[in-house]
Image (cartoon, rainbow, N blue to C red; front, side, top):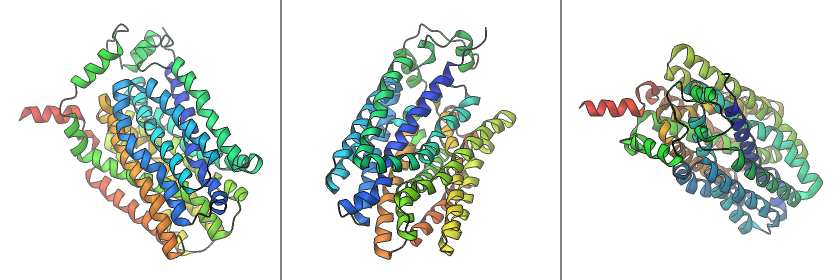
Length: 438
C-alpha cells in the first residue's frame, strides 16, 4: 500500500496559521509611525507598547506548552487563534497608549501556545528524520510572513487606514480556526485521512494501534519520562539551546519591532518605502531557513550526528549574523545598511528549525513543554529587545548602541553552543539510563 501524505497537509495548515500569527504580531510595527504621531508616543512609549506583547507571551508560552502536552494542539490552538484574532481586531479601536498596551498584552497571552503547539504537532506527526524538514517548511512562514506582510500591511494601512488594517487582519485567524478543528487530530492514529502505510512510516515501523485513546497515549508518554523536569531545567545542551534561542529572539524582535522606526528616523523613509525595504531581509531569511532545515536533516541522515546536524548550523549562523552587522555601526549608508541588515536577518533566521528539532530529538514525549521553556526565553528576549532599544535610542539619540548590543549577544551564543551544545549525548533516554546505572 502506498503511504498517504496527509501529514504534509497538516504541516501546510501549521504553515498557514504561523503566517497569520506573525503578520498579526508584526502589523503594529508598520502602523507605529502613524500611531506615534496620532497618540504623541515617544521612543519609550513605543518600546513599552511593543514590549507589552512579550509580557503576555512570556506569561503564557511556558504554561501554553504544558496545556498543549495535557490537552493537545487541536483544542489549544483553536482557542488561542480565536482569542488573538479578537485581540488584533480590537486594536482598531485604540485611542491611546493604555489601550494599545492592553490589547498587545492580550495578543501576547493568546499567541503564547502557538509554537509549543507547532513543536508538538511535528513531534507527533513526523518521523525523526523528517522533523527538521517539516519544521523548516512550517517555520519558513515566519520570514515569509514578514517579507509579504511588510508591503501588504503597509498598503492596507494606506488604503483602508490603520484601523481598517487591524480589522482585516483580525478576520484571518477566525477563518482558520474551525478548519483546524475539523481537519486535525492530535495523533495520526485517530485521523481517517492517514492510511496504515503512512502511520507505519510516521511511527518508524513500530507496531501501532488505532484503537488506543488520546488519554492512553498521553498517560503512556508521561509515565515514560522519569526525571523529566530535572532534565529540562538542568541539561547543558537544552540550556545552551535556550540561551541561543534567547539571542535569536532578541535579534528577531529587534528587527521586527524597530526596523521600520530605524529606517524612518535614520534615513527619513516614509511608510510605503519602509514596507518595500523590508522585503529583501525576510526574503533572504526565508531562503536560508528552508535551505538549512533541509541541510540539517540531510546531514543527520548521512551521519547520524546530532551535533553536526543541529549544533553547527546554530553557532555558524549566529556568528555570520554578528559579523554582518559591523558595517551598520561603522558607516551611515542606506544601501550598505540594506545589504548588512538583510544578511544579518537571513543568517540569524537560518537555523530556526534546528532549535525546535533539538527539543523533539531530545525529549519527544514532552516536546511541547520543552518548547514552552525555550519560548519563555524567546519571549523575555523580545520584551528586553523591545523596551531596552527604546531606552537606548531615547537616551543616546541613535541606534548605534542597540546594534552593538545585538552583536555582543550573538557572540555569547556562539561560545555557549560551541562549549555546551552536545545533543548526541544528552537525550532524556540516555540520561535516565546513565543515572539508573549508578
